[in-house]
Length: 108
Image 1 (spheres, rainbow, N blue to C red):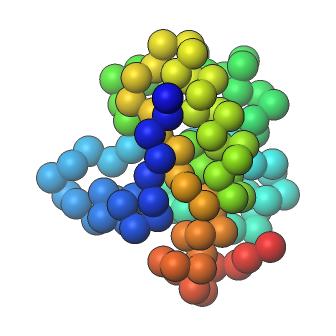
Image 2: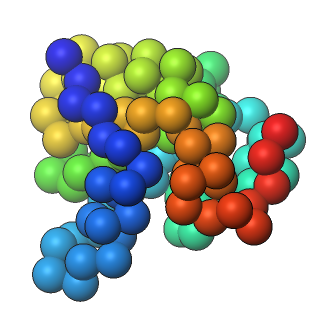
């Protein structure tokens, strides 16, 4: 089962200098990523994840991100099936981040 992470929990994590930053794995499409994104996130569209996942560092925490948290939940489950153990799904996705953390971020 994939652990869910709220946007507030992610914000706290990213603001904690004592905690290593996770890989923010954005699984949306290119056009969505161009509209809005979290800084330092890495775009790997969901349909390319089966070819790209082996490039991920299994020792690093990975937070999967999409628009509302559905595609990212699938991505996170896929990564867990591949043997990664430090995987989280951003509940509510980039939309929740924009609405609750960064109201200046574009919503779509």
